[in-house]
Structure formats: structure tokens, C-alpha cells
Image (cartoon, rainbow over all chains, first blue to last red; front, side, top):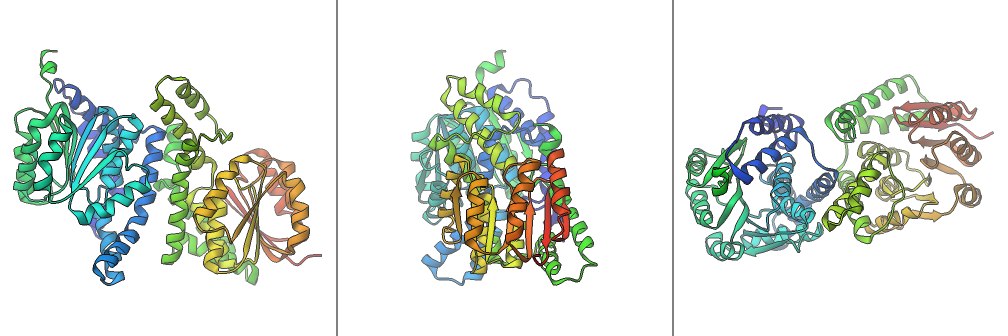
Length: 271
Length: 287
């Protein structure tokens, strides 16, 4: 078993690495970051220490349990639409579910973040199988308020929709199918001001940067944006370096593949 | 919940390691026994220790775990009261319910039922062990005392379904087991498991008179010395030659440790194996 496999998402060593990095990042002082930065700090420390309320654990278990069934349902869908060989698809879908979807340990962080922030409007670019949307929507459900707009191509939303419905979260998420370049503007207008956003769609540096810049004017003061796969390629690492230096970004944290930025609050500077 | 018990939660890496160690220790104890009755138990232990499962078995077990994850939400949405409250969660739940904030009350009730599903119900590793035992032993007639929320029943019935033969009858008095009934239907297990309500002391003798020899039994009802021994003794004359009986929570209290000592020293018991919280006995020929 290679090092990569040992540190795979969901493996004990992979989780331990995540938790240590979260604790380390959470321990760094952020004196003038405002509400967003405070939420990031609290979420990093809680997720790193494994200090989660039981109701959040109940949701994490539920999402995990359904996620185990995802490869099989994804394959049925793929067979329906494309008629490819079953075993190939099953292996491919399991691999994708394991490596592409947010790992459970990162899900903890997302659920904690959304619980701390209590946002009214969330935006997600790149629904995928709907796993990360489920983490956000579960937190909104526990908050008792807020909605998520999640964008992806038709092929993905068709898989995510029954997944979210199976979790009873369909009322918290509005899935919009289409090319993200086409659907983004309307989504931003509808969700303005955006208090939480997750970018996990276009894994090119320019695409990620363009989406972040499009989102930036609509972001509320104290909002938090999570970018996935910021260490994916050199191009993505460069885009992440640009994002974290953008104006209004009060604080930026990197935890393995996740990049998290908190938007400044003008009032916080005067405190 | 103390920090240590949280770290030893079911399915946490240390708990999994401990589980494998317990199974390996059980295997070592079985190594010197050549009787065919004990060999089936050895195969089940080996399969559970190594985690060698077929795709169909994995799928069936994952579905039971989905059910476990769903129960708290079903219970809270339906406004049911489980009435089984483990230790220190009730206070937090009461505080939450008293709060005017609706989402806080929802979160508190969810937290409470989740604790029950996670700590009171059978853990995933022991559920898997139970399922593999049923897979290897292939019992025609199985019996469970104490349905609870129906998770252990679902594990056994899933295994019977994969075997393609056998029937499990499960007994409970508690109304919470209505949740179990719905679960069996949802998992497509209704043909393999039958739930009977009533006091076990009243329902068990009639049932035993009707079903004929029992090949497999899981005892997880009242956790007292007298009830456990009484149930086992009621069962004993109706057990088939080579029948396997599994007792849950034999280390929970002093009374349960005593109950295990009594049960495992009954004359018809040819082999007994304590595996941490679970005790397994193999019965010889009657008379």
C-alpha cells in the first residue's frame, strides 16, 4: 500500500492528517478578521478536535450511509443513459466518489462552518454527486433557516437530485442544471448577498479565478468561501495565491486540498 | 459523553482494532477444537476478523447502516418517543425541548435519538459478525429476544435473505419496536423476519411449542440475571443439536457477567466463547 493510499480520504491516517492541519490552522490568531474569520477559526478547531454536537454527527452518519450506496445508483443511472459495461462503471464511480467528492472529514468542517455562520443564502458551483451540497443543506436544516443554490451540468444534477431527496434535503437546495458560465449570473442575482460559497467546478486556474471574481461583489461582509482542490495543479495553486490576496479577503487558510477565505467586515476594523 | 468513550465509539479506528483483536483471540481459542459444530463458528469468526465479504453481503450490510442512520430522523419527524434514554443525554434533550427556539428543540431530539441508535443498538462491527454467523450456520429457524429498533434483527434477516432460506422470529414488548417493523419492510425483509409483541415470558413458551427446534438464537432482552437465565432455560429444551446462541452485553453489569457464567456452564453447552460484550455458546445433543 503506497503513501497516497494510506493518506486517502476516509483512511485513519488521512483523517488524522486533516485533523492536525485543521487544529494548526485554527490555532493561528486572527484578531481583526470579523465574523467570517471567527467562524472559520471556531469550525477548524471543532472539526479538528472532533468536538461536534450529536445532531451534527447524526447528519454526518446519514450522509455517509447514503454515500455508500451512491456508486451503485450512479452506475444504474450511467447504464440507463449510456449503456456502458457495469463493472467498469462501478469501479469508476467508487473511485470518483472516494477521491472527487468531499471526504467526510472535510464534510465535518463544512457542516460546522455553515452552523457557525447561519447563512441565509449559500451558493455552490459544481454539485457533483451532491455530497458537499448535502453537508451544507444539513447544516441549514439544523439552523432552521437558509437556502443553497447549487449549479452543475445536467448529467450531475440528475444524480444529485435523488441523492438529496433521499436525505430529505430537497427543500433546502435549488439545483440548477446547465453550463456554469450560463447559470452563474442568475444564481448570484437570486442569492445576493451570498454568505457562504463553495467552489468546486472548474479545475482550471482561470475558471476558478473568474468564478471567484464574479461572486466577489455579491459576497456579504463576513462571508466565507471554500475552494476545493486548490492544490490540484500548479495552475490551481497559482489561482489560489491570487484569490487569497484579493481585496476584501480578511483571512485565508489552506487545509490540504481546501482553501478557505473569509471576507472582511468594515465594522470589524473599528473594533 | 466523556472524551475516552467518544474515541472508543463504534467504528472509530481504536474500536475497530480492538474488535479485530477480540475476534483473533476467539479464533485462537477455537483452533484446538475439531468438532464440526464449532468449525462453523470458526469460519464465521475468520470471515469477520479478516473482513472477507462478498459484494452482495457488503451491499446488504450497507443498507442496514443506512437504516440506522435514518432511524433518528424518522423518529423525530414522526414525533415518536423511544422511552429508552441512555445516561446523560436526557438532560440535554430536556433543556433543548424547553427552549422556545424550534430548531434547537429539533436538534436536541435528533441528538438524543441518535445517541440511542449509536450506543444502545448493536454496533456495526457486531452486526456484521451476527450476519456472518447466520450466513455460515444457515439456520432454518432463528429466534431473537429483544427487537429494540430492529437493527440486529435486520442484520440477521439480511443474512437469511442472502442464504435464501430460514425464518427469524423476534420478540419485544416495547412500542418503540414499531420503528423496527417499518425498517424490515423498507429493507425488503418482511418475508424473512416476523415481529411479535408481548411480554417475552408469555410469548416465548407458545412460540417455542409452535416452531420446532431452534438453530440459532440471539438474546438481547431484559439485561438482568434472572431474566437472562430464565429465557435461556426456556429456550434450552427447544434448541437443535449444534444450535448456536449469542448473548449480548454480557459484560455490561455484574448481573450480566453472572448470567453469562450460569448460561455457559449449563450441561448441554459444549462450547462457550466470550468475545468482549458478546457471548457465544454452542449446544450439544438434547438429553
